[in-house]
Length: 546
Image (cartoon, rainbow, N blue to C red; front, top):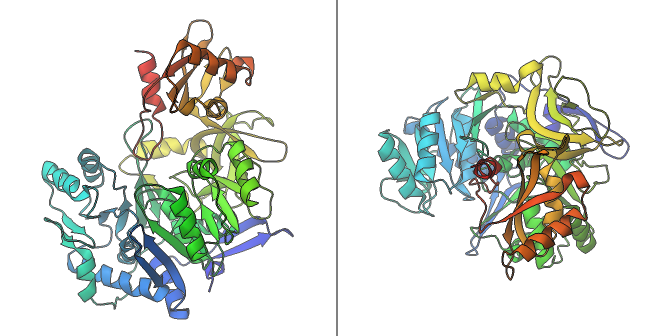
Protein backbone atom coordinates (compact mmCIF):
# COMPACT_ATOMS: atom_id res chain seq x y z
CA UNK A 1 0.00 0.00 0.00
CA UNK A 2 1.41 3.36 -1.05
CA UNK A 3 -0.65 6.18 0.43
CA UNK A 4 1.45 9.18 -0.53
CA UNK A 5 -0.82 9.99 -3.48
CA UNK A 6 -3.58 10.78 -0.97
CA UNK A 7 -1.56 13.81 0.06
CA UNK A 8 -0.29 15.17 -3.25
CA UNK A 9 -1.01 15.52 -6.96
CA UNK A 10 1.88 14.86 -9.34
CA UNK A 11 2.56 15.52 -12.99
CA UNK A 12 5.22 13.49 -14.79
CA UNK A 13 6.54 13.39 -18.35
CA UNK A 14 6.83 10.40 -20.65
CA UNK A 15 10.09 9.24 -19.05
CA UNK A 16 8.58 9.22 -15.57
CA UNK A 17 10.34 12.40 -14.56
CA UNK A 18 8.47 14.58 -12.07
CA UNK A 19 7.48 17.93 -13.58
CA UNK A 20 5.20 19.26 -10.84
CA UNK A 21 3.71 18.42 -7.46
CA UNK A 22 1.04 20.01 -5.28
CA UNK A 23 0.32 18.97 -1.70
CA UNK A 24 -3.04 18.65 0.03
CA UNK A 25 -3.45 17.51 3.61
CA UNK A 26 -5.77 18.13 6.57
CA UNK A 27 -5.00 20.94 9.00
CA UNK A 28 -4.35 18.32 11.67
CA UNK A 29 -2.03 16.11 9.60
CA UNK A 30 0.11 13.91 11.83
CA UNK A 31 2.50 11.31 10.41
CA UNK A 32 1.90 8.94 13.32
CA UNK A 33 -1.85 8.67 12.88
CA UNK A 34 -2.31 9.54 9.21
CA UNK A 35 0.50 7.43 7.77
CA UNK A 36 1.72 4.75 10.19
CA UNK A 37 -1.67 3.89 11.70
CA UNK A 38 -3.44 4.07 8.33
CA UNK A 39 -1.01 1.65 6.70
CA UNK A 40 -1.21 -0.61 9.76
CA UNK A 41 -5.01 -0.69 9.55
CA UNK A 42 -5.06 -1.46 5.82
CA UNK A 43 -2.05 -3.82 5.55
CA UNK A 44 -1.03 -4.79 9.10
CA UNK A 45 1.54 -7.39 8.03
CA UNK A 46 3.33 -5.15 5.52
CA UNK A 47 7.02 -4.87 6.44
CA UNK A 48 8.01 -1.47 7.77
CA UNK A 49 11.55 -2.12 8.98
CA UNK A 50 14.23 -4.77 8.74
CA UNK A 51 16.76 -4.33 11.55
CA UNK A 52 20.00 -6.11 12.31
CA UNK A 53 23.24 -5.40 14.13
CA UNK A 54 26.85 -6.53 14.16
CA UNK A 55 26.03 -9.23 16.76
CA UNK A 56 23.76 -10.98 14.23
CA UNK A 57 20.60 -9.98 16.09
CA UNK A 58 17.68 -9.48 13.72
CA UNK A 59 14.16 -8.05 13.97
CA UNK A 60 11.58 -7.54 11.24
CA UNK A 61 8.78 -5.14 12.17
CA UNK A 62 5.45 -4.79 10.40
CA UNK A 63 3.47 -1.56 10.29
CA UNK A 64 1.15 -3.08 12.89
CA UNK A 65 4.18 -3.58 15.14
CA UNK A 66 5.27 0.03 14.69
CA UNK A 67 1.74 1.30 15.31
CA UNK A 68 1.22 -0.69 18.52
CA UNK A 69 4.74 -0.17 19.90
CA UNK A 70 4.53 3.56 19.26
CA UNK A 71 1.22 3.61 21.17
CA UNK A 72 2.85 1.81 24.09
CA UNK A 73 5.78 4.22 24.02
CA UNK A 74 3.43 7.18 23.89
CA UNK A 75 1.55 5.89 26.95
CA UNK A 76 4.80 5.53 28.92
CA UNK A 77 5.68 9.14 28.08
CA UNK A 78 2.20 10.47 28.79
CA UNK A 79 2.00 8.71 32.15
CA UNK A 80 5.35 10.30 33.03
CA UNK A 81 3.99 13.78 32.32
CA UNK A 82 5.31 14.51 28.82
CA UNK A 83 2.79 16.56 26.88
CA UNK A 84 2.22 18.29 23.55
CA UNK A 85 4.88 20.93 22.89
CA UNK A 86 7.43 19.45 25.31
CA UNK A 87 10.91 18.97 23.88
CA UNK A 88 12.61 15.61 24.16
CA UNK A 89 16.23 14.86 23.27
CA UNK A 90 16.75 11.49 21.58
CA UNK A 91 20.22 9.91 21.30
CA UNK A 92 19.48 6.36 20.20
CA UNK A 93 22.05 5.65 17.48
CA UNK A 94 20.40 3.07 15.19
CA UNK A 95 18.50 1.17 17.89
CA UNK A 96 15.07 0.05 16.70
CA UNK A 97 13.46 1.82 19.67
CA UNK A 98 14.11 5.09 17.80
CA UNK A 99 11.33 4.27 15.32
CA UNK A 100 8.83 3.46 18.10
CA UNK A 101 9.81 6.61 19.93
CA UNK A 102 9.79 9.01 17.00
CA UNK A 103 6.28 7.97 15.97
CA UNK A 104 5.16 8.13 19.62
CA UNK A 105 6.48 11.68 20.06
CA UNK A 106 4.70 12.73 16.87
CA UNK A 107 1.43 11.24 18.15
CA UNK A 108 1.78 13.09 21.45
CA UNK A 109 2.73 16.33 19.71
CA UNK A 110 6.01 16.57 21.60
CA UNK A 111 9.02 18.00 19.77
CA UNK A 112 11.68 15.41 19.01
CA UNK A 113 15.31 16.56 19.15
CA UNK A 114 17.48 13.87 17.55
CA UNK A 115 21.17 14.11 18.46
CA UNK A 116 24.20 11.96 17.80
CA UNK A 117 25.55 9.66 20.49
CA UNK A 118 28.98 11.26 19.95
CA UNK A 119 28.03 14.36 21.94
CA UNK A 120 30.20 15.27 24.90
CA UNK A 121 28.79 16.44 28.22
CA UNK A 122 29.41 20.05 27.12
CA UNK A 123 27.50 19.39 23.90
CA UNK A 124 24.53 18.05 25.86
CA UNK A 125 24.67 21.08 28.15
CA UNK A 126 24.49 23.46 25.20
CA UNK A 127 21.49 21.62 23.74
CA UNK A 128 19.72 21.33 27.08
CA UNK A 129 20.09 25.03 27.78
CA UNK A 130 19.09 26.05 24.27
CA UNK A 131 16.07 23.75 23.99
CA UNK A 132 14.88 23.56 27.61
CA UNK A 133 14.17 19.89 26.98
CA UNK A 134 12.20 18.01 29.64
CA UNK A 135 13.57 14.54 28.90
CA UNK A 136 16.46 12.63 27.35
CA UNK A 137 16.14 9.12 25.93
CA UNK A 138 19.62 7.72 25.33
CA UNK A 139 21.51 4.66 24.25
CA UNK A 140 23.08 2.73 27.14
CA UNK A 141 26.34 2.43 25.20
CA UNK A 142 29.39 4.55 24.25
CA UNK A 143 29.49 6.42 27.59
CA UNK A 144 26.36 8.33 26.63
CA UNK A 145 24.62 7.80 30.01
CA UNK A 146 27.69 9.13 31.83
CA UNK A 147 27.81 12.22 29.60
CA UNK A 148 24.09 12.82 30.05
CA UNK A 149 24.28 12.52 33.84
CA UNK A 150 27.22 14.92 33.96
CA UNK A 151 25.35 17.42 31.78
CA UNK A 152 22.20 17.19 33.89
CA UNK A 153 24.21 17.60 37.08
CA UNK A 154 26.09 20.64 35.81
CA UNK A 155 22.95 22.38 34.53
CA UNK A 156 21.00 21.65 37.71
CA UNK A 157 17.97 20.76 35.62
CA UNK A 158 15.41 18.15 36.62
CA UNK A 159 14.82 15.87 33.65
CA UNK A 160 13.12 12.60 32.89
CA UNK A 161 15.83 10.16 31.81
CA UNK A 162 15.39 6.88 29.98
CA UNK A 163 17.72 4.45 28.32
CA UNK A 164 16.78 1.39 26.26
CA UNK A 165 17.57 -2.34 26.25
CA UNK A 166 19.86 -2.32 29.30
CA UNK A 167 19.52 -0.85 32.79
CA UNK A 168 21.72 2.10 33.71
CA UNK A 169 21.97 3.85 37.07
CA UNK A 170 19.98 7.09 37.05
CA UNK A 171 17.85 6.04 34.08
CA UNK A 172 14.54 4.28 33.61
CA UNK A 173 14.46 1.48 31.06
CA UNK A 174 12.06 2.48 28.28
CA UNK A 175 12.21 -0.92 26.59
CA UNK A 176 11.00 -2.64 29.77
CA UNK A 177 8.32 -0.05 30.48
CA UNK A 178 6.94 -0.41 26.96
CA UNK A 179 6.32 -4.12 27.58
CA UNK A 180 3.63 -3.47 30.18
CA UNK A 181 2.11 -0.29 28.73
CA UNK A 182 -1.24 -0.21 26.94
CA UNK A 183 -1.19 -0.34 23.14
CA UNK A 184 -4.43 1.66 22.94
CA UNK A 185 -4.11 5.40 22.30
CA UNK A 186 -6.76 7.99 21.57
CA UNK A 187 -5.74 10.56 18.98
CA UNK A 188 -4.18 13.70 20.44
CA UNK A 189 -4.97 16.63 18.17
CA UNK A 190 -2.04 18.48 16.65
CA UNK A 191 -1.86 21.05 13.87
CA UNK A 192 0.14 20.68 10.68
CA UNK A 193 1.88 23.95 11.58
CA UNK A 194 2.94 22.80 15.07
CA UNK A 195 6.66 22.14 15.66
CA UNK A 196 7.44 18.43 15.19
CA UNK A 197 11.22 18.00 15.07
CA UNK A 198 14.22 20.14 15.99
CA UNK A 199 17.67 19.47 14.55
CA UNK A 200 20.85 21.14 15.68
CA UNK A 201 23.09 21.90 12.72
CA UNK A 202 26.68 20.71 12.80
CA UNK A 203 28.05 24.16 13.65
CA UNK A 204 30.74 24.48 10.99
CA UNK A 205 31.05 28.23 11.51
CA UNK A 206 29.75 28.75 15.04
CA UNK A 207 27.51 27.33 17.74
CA UNK A 208 24.92 24.85 16.43
CA UNK A 209 21.62 26.39 15.38
CA UNK A 210 18.33 24.76 16.30
CA UNK A 211 16.35 24.17 13.10
CA UNK A 212 12.60 23.64 13.59
CA UNK A 213 10.35 21.72 11.19
CA UNK A 214 6.57 21.37 11.49
CA UNK A 215 4.25 18.39 10.91
CA UNK A 216 4.24 18.85 7.12
CA UNK A 217 7.95 17.93 7.03
CA UNK A 218 7.34 14.19 6.35
CA UNK A 219 5.19 14.99 3.30
CA UNK A 220 7.98 17.13 1.85
CA UNK A 221 10.12 13.98 1.71
CA UNK A 222 7.81 12.23 -0.77
CA UNK A 223 9.93 13.61 -3.62
CA UNK A 224 13.10 12.63 -1.75
CA UNK A 225 12.05 9.00 -1.55
CA UNK A 226 10.05 8.47 -4.74
CA UNK A 227 11.97 10.49 -7.31
CA UNK A 228 15.53 10.75 -6.03
CA UNK A 229 16.21 7.64 -3.93
CA UNK A 230 13.62 5.78 -6.02
CA UNK A 231 12.36 3.77 -3.05
CA UNK A 232 9.56 1.50 -4.23
CA UNK A 233 6.31 0.17 -2.83
CA UNK A 234 7.24 -3.26 -1.47
CA UNK A 235 10.96 -2.52 -1.79
CA UNK A 236 13.66 -2.22 0.87
CA UNK A 237 15.51 1.08 1.14
CA UNK A 238 18.82 1.48 2.97
CA UNK A 239 20.16 4.93 3.86
CA UNK A 240 23.41 4.94 5.82
CA UNK A 241 22.94 7.47 8.61
CA UNK A 242 22.83 7.62 12.36
CA UNK A 243 19.47 8.84 13.69
CA UNK A 244 21.04 11.94 15.22
CA UNK A 245 21.29 13.63 11.83
CA UNK A 246 18.64 15.01 9.49
CA UNK A 247 19.77 12.48 6.87
CA UNK A 248 17.85 9.88 8.92
CA UNK A 249 14.65 11.85 8.28
CA UNK A 250 15.55 11.95 4.59
CA UNK A 251 16.13 8.24 4.23
CA UNK A 252 15.05 6.10 7.17
CA UNK A 253 11.40 6.81 7.88
CA UNK A 254 9.13 9.48 6.38
CA UNK A 255 9.25 9.44 2.60
CA UNK A 256 10.05 5.74 2.45
CA UNK A 257 7.00 4.70 4.47
CA UNK A 258 4.81 7.14 2.57
CA UNK A 259 5.72 5.47 -0.73
CA UNK A 260 5.27 1.99 0.75
CA UNK A 261 8.91 0.95 1.09
CA UNK A 262 10.37 -0.81 4.11
CA UNK A 263 13.55 0.64 5.60
CA UNK A 264 16.74 -1.32 6.22
CA UNK A 265 18.53 -0.48 9.46
CA UNK A 266 22.00 -1.81 10.27
CA UNK A 267 23.09 -0.96 13.81
CA UNK A 268 26.88 -0.62 13.78
CA UNK A 269 29.64 1.52 15.26
CA UNK A 270 32.61 1.11 12.94
CA UNK A 271 32.09 1.31 9.20
CA UNK A 272 33.14 -1.76 7.24
CA UNK A 273 32.26 -1.77 3.52
CA UNK A 274 32.18 -5.56 3.45
CA UNK A 275 29.58 -5.63 6.23
CA UNK A 276 27.37 -3.15 4.36
CA UNK A 277 27.54 -5.23 1.21
CA UNK A 278 26.70 -8.36 3.21
CA UNK A 279 23.61 -6.68 4.68
CA UNK A 280 22.52 -5.43 1.24
CA UNK A 281 22.79 -8.92 -0.23
CA UNK A 282 21.38 -10.84 2.73
CA UNK A 283 18.14 -8.87 2.88
CA UNK A 284 17.77 -7.92 -0.78
CA UNK A 285 18.08 -4.15 -0.46
CA UNK A 286 16.61 -2.52 -3.58
CA UNK A 287 17.68 1.12 -3.16
CA UNK A 288 20.72 2.51 -1.34
CA UNK A 289 21.79 6.00 -0.30
CA UNK A 290 25.10 6.92 1.33
CA UNK A 291 27.57 9.81 1.43
CA UNK A 292 30.40 9.84 -1.13
CA UNK A 293 32.85 8.74 1.58
CA UNK A 294 31.22 5.30 1.69
CA UNK A 295 31.27 4.93 -2.08
CA UNK A 296 34.96 5.91 -2.05
CA UNK A 297 35.65 3.12 0.43
CA UNK A 298 33.63 0.65 -1.60
CA UNK A 299 35.54 1.56 -4.75
CA UNK A 300 38.97 1.45 -3.08
CA UNK A 301 38.29 -1.85 -1.31
CA UNK A 302 36.70 -3.45 -4.35
CA UNK A 303 32.98 -3.21 -5.08
CA UNK A 304 31.31 -6.58 -4.40
CA UNK A 305 28.40 -7.99 -6.38
CA UNK A 306 25.10 -6.54 -5.13
CA UNK A 307 22.50 -7.97 -7.53
CA UNK A 308 19.37 -6.82 -5.66
CA UNK A 309 20.29 -3.13 -5.92
CA UNK A 310 18.29 -1.24 -8.52
CA UNK A 311 19.16 2.34 -7.59
CA UNK A 312 21.90 4.23 -5.74
CA UNK A 313 22.07 7.83 -4.58
CA UNK A 314 24.43 10.08 -2.66
CA UNK A 315 24.52 13.43 -0.87
CA UNK A 316 26.19 15.30 1.95
CA UNK A 317 29.50 16.20 0.31
CA UNK A 318 30.99 16.64 -3.11
CA UNK A 319 31.06 13.51 -5.27
CA UNK A 320 34.32 12.96 -7.14
CA UNK A 321 33.54 12.21 -10.82
CA UNK A 322 36.14 9.44 -10.75
CA UNK A 323 34.22 7.64 -7.99
CA UNK A 324 31.04 8.02 -10.03
CA UNK A 325 32.76 6.46 -13.05
CA UNK A 326 34.39 3.58 -11.18
CA UNK A 327 31.23 2.67 -9.25
CA UNK A 328 29.17 2.61 -12.44
CA UNK A 329 31.88 0.56 -14.15
CA UNK A 330 31.75 -2.04 -11.36
CA UNK A 331 27.98 -2.17 -10.80
CA UNK A 332 26.27 -0.69 -13.84
CA UNK A 333 24.49 1.73 -11.48
CA UNK A 334 24.73 5.49 -11.69
CA UNK A 335 25.15 7.47 -8.48
CA UNK A 336 22.33 10.00 -8.36
CA UNK A 337 23.55 13.01 -6.43
CA UNK A 338 21.16 15.22 -4.49
CA UNK A 339 21.34 18.47 -2.57
CA UNK A 340 19.56 19.99 0.39
CA UNK A 341 20.15 21.28 3.90
CA UNK A 342 19.05 20.61 7.46
CA UNK A 343 16.79 23.63 6.95
CA UNK A 344 15.17 22.13 3.87
CA UNK A 345 14.30 18.87 2.17
CA UNK A 346 15.64 17.95 -1.27
CA UNK A 347 16.25 21.10 -3.33
CA UNK A 348 17.97 19.59 -6.37
CA UNK A 349 18.86 16.12 -7.61
CA UNK A 350 19.54 13.79 -10.48
CA UNK A 351 15.95 12.60 -10.53
CA UNK A 352 14.15 9.52 -11.77
CA UNK A 353 13.67 9.70 -15.53
CA UNK A 354 16.89 11.61 -16.21
CA UNK A 355 20.44 10.47 -16.83
CA UNK A 356 22.62 11.18 -13.81
CA UNK A 357 25.36 13.71 -14.55
CA UNK A 358 28.51 12.86 -12.62
CA UNK A 359 29.54 15.65 -10.27
CA UNK A 360 26.33 17.62 -10.79
CA UNK A 361 23.77 18.34 -8.07
CA UNK A 362 21.14 17.68 -10.71
CA UNK A 363 18.27 19.98 -11.55
CA UNK A 364 16.08 22.05 -9.19
CA UNK A 365 13.27 20.07 -7.59
CA UNK A 366 9.79 20.71 -9.06
CA UNK A 367 8.63 20.83 -5.44
CA UNK A 368 10.30 24.23 -5.01
CA UNK A 369 11.06 27.40 -6.91
CA UNK A 370 14.85 27.09 -6.67
CA UNK A 371 16.97 29.70 -8.41
CA UNK A 372 20.45 31.18 -8.50
CA UNK A 373 20.82 34.77 -7.42
CA UNK A 374 23.50 37.45 -7.56
CA UNK A 375 24.04 39.73 -4.57
CA UNK A 376 21.93 42.40 -6.25
CA UNK A 377 19.04 39.98 -6.66
CA UNK A 378 19.44 39.47 -10.39
CA UNK A 379 19.85 36.12 -12.14
CA UNK A 380 23.39 35.01 -13.08
CA UNK A 381 24.27 34.05 -16.63
CA UNK A 382 24.84 30.42 -17.62
CA UNK A 383 28.12 29.31 -16.04
CA UNK A 384 28.20 32.24 -13.59
CA UNK A 385 28.26 31.50 -9.87
CA UNK A 386 25.32 32.62 -7.77
CA UNK A 387 23.69 31.80 -4.45
CA UNK A 388 21.11 29.02 -4.30
CA UNK A 389 17.84 30.56 -3.07
CA UNK A 390 14.28 29.30 -2.62
CA UNK A 391 11.26 31.45 -3.42
CA UNK A 392 7.83 31.25 -1.76
CA UNK A 393 5.10 29.30 -3.58
CA UNK A 394 1.83 31.21 -4.02
CA UNK A 395 3.20 33.76 -1.56
CA UNK A 396 3.75 31.15 1.17
CA UNK A 397 6.69 29.30 2.64
CA UNK A 398 6.65 25.90 0.92
CA UNK A 399 6.43 22.77 3.03
CA UNK A 400 9.76 21.23 3.90
CA UNK A 401 11.45 24.58 4.48
CA UNK A 402 12.10 25.07 8.18
CA UNK A 403 9.73 27.20 10.21
CA UNK A 404 12.28 28.85 12.48
CA UNK A 405 15.62 28.92 14.25
CA UNK A 406 15.29 28.05 17.93
CA UNK A 407 15.21 31.26 19.95
CA UNK A 408 16.59 33.38 17.11
CA UNK A 409 13.93 35.15 15.07
CA UNK A 410 16.49 37.66 13.81
CA UNK A 411 18.61 34.92 12.25
CA UNK A 412 15.52 33.39 10.66
CA UNK A 413 14.42 36.73 9.22
CA UNK A 414 17.92 37.25 7.85
CA UNK A 415 17.79 33.85 6.15
CA UNK A 416 14.56 35.03 4.48
CA UNK A 417 15.79 38.53 3.63
CA UNK A 418 14.40 39.95 0.44
CA UNK A 419 11.50 37.52 0.56
CA UNK A 420 13.58 34.48 -0.44
CA UNK A 421 15.33 31.78 1.58
CA UNK A 422 19.10 32.16 1.30
CA UNK A 423 20.94 28.84 1.53
CA UNK A 424 24.40 30.42 1.77
CA UNK A 425 25.56 27.88 -0.83
CA UNK A 426 26.88 28.86 -4.22
CA UNK A 427 26.54 27.04 -7.53
CA UNK A 428 26.43 27.63 -11.26
CA UNK A 429 24.01 26.32 -13.86
CA UNK A 430 24.99 24.79 -17.18
CA UNK A 431 23.11 25.09 -20.47
CA UNK A 432 21.12 21.93 -19.66
CA UNK A 433 19.75 23.32 -16.39
CA UNK A 434 21.99 21.23 -14.11
CA UNK A 435 23.43 22.83 -10.99
CA UNK A 436 27.11 22.49 -10.10
CA UNK A 437 28.12 23.10 -6.49
CA UNK A 438 30.77 25.77 -5.99
CA UNK A 439 31.00 26.01 -2.19
CA UNK A 440 29.73 27.83 0.84
CA UNK A 441 29.94 31.59 0.44
CA UNK A 442 32.07 31.79 3.56
CA UNK A 443 34.45 29.22 2.00
CA UNK A 444 34.83 31.03 -1.32
CA UNK A 445 38.39 32.13 -2.08
CA UNK A 446 38.85 35.47 -3.86
CA UNK A 447 42.24 35.60 -5.53
CA UNK A 448 43.38 38.18 -8.08
CA UNK A 449 39.79 39.15 -8.81
CA UNK A 450 38.72 35.54 -9.31
CA UNK A 451 36.25 33.59 -7.17
CA UNK A 452 37.48 30.07 -6.46
CA UNK A 453 35.46 27.22 -5.00
CA UNK A 454 37.74 25.06 -2.83
CA UNK A 455 35.94 21.91 -3.96
CA UNK A 456 37.36 22.27 -7.44
CA UNK A 457 40.90 22.05 -6.08
CA UNK A 458 40.19 19.46 -3.39
CA UNK A 459 38.76 17.21 -6.11
CA UNK A 460 42.20 17.09 -7.78
CA UNK A 461 44.24 17.08 -4.57
CA UNK A 462 42.56 13.94 -3.24
CA UNK A 463 43.59 11.97 -6.33
CA UNK A 464 47.31 12.32 -5.46
CA UNK A 465 48.45 9.06 -3.82
CA UNK A 466 50.17 10.96 -0.99
CA UNK A 467 46.95 12.73 0.06
CA UNK A 468 44.76 10.89 2.55
CA UNK A 469 42.59 13.91 3.39
CA UNK A 470 42.67 17.53 2.34
CA UNK A 471 41.14 20.95 2.78
CA UNK A 472 41.61 24.09 0.70
CA UNK A 473 41.25 27.59 2.14
CA UNK A 474 42.16 31.16 1.22
CA UNK A 475 44.91 32.94 3.15
CA UNK A 476 45.91 36.63 3.06
CA UNK A 477 48.22 37.52 0.19
CA UNK A 478 49.53 41.05 -0.45
CA UNK A 479 49.54 40.57 -4.23
CA UNK A 480 46.36 38.60 -4.88
CA UNK A 481 44.23 39.50 -1.86
CA UNK A 482 44.04 35.80 -1.06
CA UNK A 483 46.24 32.86 -2.01
CA UNK A 484 45.15 29.25 -2.24
CA UNK A 485 46.42 27.07 0.61
CA UNK A 486 46.14 23.29 0.70
CA UNK A 487 46.10 21.52 4.06
CA UNK A 488 47.01 17.87 3.69
CA UNK A 489 46.93 14.76 5.88
CA UNK A 490 49.57 12.50 4.30
CA UNK A 491 48.67 8.92 3.40
CA UNK A 492 50.48 5.99 4.98
CA UNK A 493 54.03 5.70 3.69
CA UNK A 494 54.46 9.43 3.00
CA UNK A 495 56.28 11.93 5.19
CA UNK A 496 56.05 15.73 4.98
CA UNK A 497 59.00 17.23 3.10
CA UNK A 498 59.91 20.04 0.73
CA UNK A 499 60.07 17.44 -2.02
CA UNK A 500 56.52 16.22 -1.33
CA UNK A 501 55.33 19.83 -1.05
CA UNK A 502 56.64 20.56 -4.56
CA UNK A 503 55.36 17.27 -5.95
CA UNK A 504 51.82 17.97 -4.76
CA UNK A 505 51.88 21.53 -6.10
CA UNK A 506 53.22 20.44 -9.48
CA UNK A 507 50.69 17.61 -9.69
CA UNK A 508 47.70 19.82 -8.91
CA UNK A 509 48.77 23.04 -10.62
CA UNK A 510 49.41 21.23 -13.88
CA UNK A 511 45.72 20.27 -13.77
CA UNK A 512 44.35 23.67 -12.69
CA UNK A 513 43.84 27.01 -14.36
CA UNK A 514 46.61 29.37 -13.25
CA UNK A 515 44.36 31.52 -11.08
CA UNK A 516 43.47 28.42 -9.05
CA UNK A 517 47.07 27.37 -8.43
CA UNK A 518 48.02 26.16 -4.96
CA UNK A 519 50.57 28.57 -3.49
CA UNK A 520 51.03 27.04 -0.03
CA UNK A 521 50.91 23.45 1.27
CA UNK A 522 50.65 22.63 4.97
CA UNK A 523 50.94 19.09 6.32
CA UNK A 524 48.97 18.08 9.39
CA UNK A 525 48.24 14.90 11.35
CA UNK A 526 44.48 15.51 11.50
CA UNK A 527 41.78 17.95 10.43
CA UNK A 528 39.66 19.90 12.92
CA UNK A 529 36.13 18.56 12.47
CA UNK A 530 32.60 18.87 13.75
CA UNK A 531 31.01 15.78 15.28
CA UNK A 532 29.32 15.05 11.97
CA UNK A 533 32.74 14.82 10.33
CA UNK A 534 32.75 18.13 8.47
CA UNK A 535 36.08 19.98 8.34
CA UNK A 536 36.07 23.23 10.28
CA UNK A 537 37.38 25.51 7.56
CA UNK A 538 36.63 28.60 9.67
CA UNK A 539 39.02 27.29 12.32
CA UNK A 540 41.67 26.63 9.67
CA UNK A 541 41.28 30.13 8.23
CA UNK A 542 41.59 31.64 11.69
CA UNK A 543 44.75 29.66 12.43
CA UNK A 544 46.23 30.73 9.10
CA UNK A 545 46.21 34.43 10.02
CA UNK A 546 47.54 34.09 13.57
